[in-house]
Length: 358
Ligand SMILES: Cc1cc2nc3c(=O)[nH]c(=O)nc-3n(C[C@H](O)[C@H](O)[C@H](O)COP(=O)(O)O)c2cc1C
Image 1 (tube, rainbow, N blue to C red):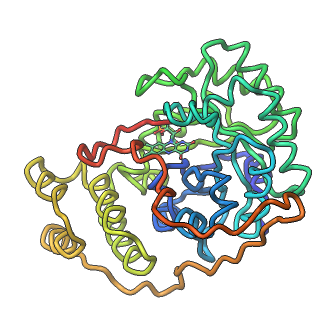
Image 2: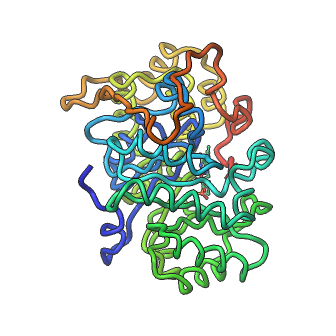
């Protein structure tokens, strides 16, 4: 794919980025935020070993369309072979891969993923270098981190990553123990000043103005948003609450790109959070079918799904298994739904937007 993300980040303007979000930053949502001034999108975190081994995992976890660019595919990986194999397989459909070093969930730490990698800089270096050696620039290899408790150690880690060939770094400027507290701007700036590669700042941005303020104060090249985009996918275009056009676009997109009911409904729950009165919100949040949700939206907002003029259907992805790097790789036949990763990421009962699992 043609776009060079590093060159984009070097432009003297704020690059606006949709965060990796398990379950949420999938193709339909990426298509939506790209219509509202989002420059770069990340996929949800995908387990690299599953992606390499299982065609079912690949089909469940990744889809894309012709407009889905620039795109970074984020992986959870702990062995260089898995990360590099997954990267090679997905490379024809994206502009770069990212390594998740920020997931603070217990299951991830136990498995050696996410923040567990922050204490293993040599392994992270090896993971990055293996991809870099196999896939040349402008394809990017990036890492998303959280802050360690100790700032000098965080800076050391970032310098090690820079030396290992990381294209850019995303810093969620909170430690693994911080939940929705304000970000640690001091540490973010210190990291930014310690390395030469582009840094993307992440955490606590809920409006375009806040994005601009963080861009100015941190001097980072890009601003990444997660929760703020869930509640208002048009945030980067300057809208302060989800505009009606965005609801209309969501209905259009999800009637064209296959989207399961829960995903379609959850996103609407987030988007309508600020505009629906409490009672109406409770009614909408408890709806159980696509039809009843569409009926509700029609009666409250007067919109129904319309045919999308341009082609946004997913493209067929065919993956080359990188057998030359691992003769043991086989195309598994799967049973069960073990690829629906991290069920505890999101408490479906609560439907609250301030989830911050990473
Ligand atoms: C629903 C949800 C899912 C997330 N999934 C991921 C993920 O797959 N990978 C990742 O690195 N971070 C993930 N995160 C963390 C976000 O990318 C981001 O770092 C965090 O939410 C802080 O940004 P915010 O303050 O703009 O929400 C997730 C966050 C949310 C809310």
